[in-house]
Image (cartoon, rainbow, N blue to C red):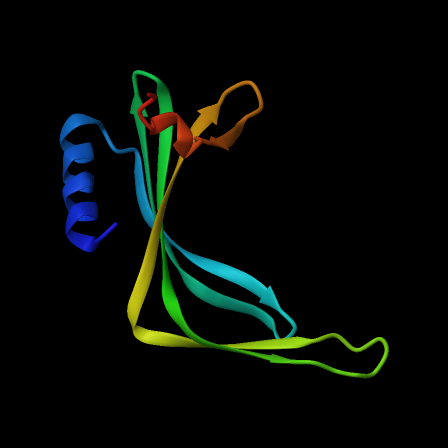
Length: 117
């Protein structure tokens, strides 16, 4: 989702619902060199007639190049290096619904939003 549409969606959510929480989180991936920040996530939590909903917009840099280094020695693992763009980002939106029974967020399947034929 492009930035303009995301901002329009956020404005609409603020207008229609009382947004309880809006914050940013770092997206961290474990590598052989330790934890690395791979992007950021913007989180919105708001109550709806269906229950509490959480929208997460993940923004990651676009992968420009991927190099794989193999070891031919037994017991040694392969290593992968990525080259990321500093100006281009890919975005993904995930939706979650609060499950009171299990006290956790359950991801909403995007297939449920598709029209049936």
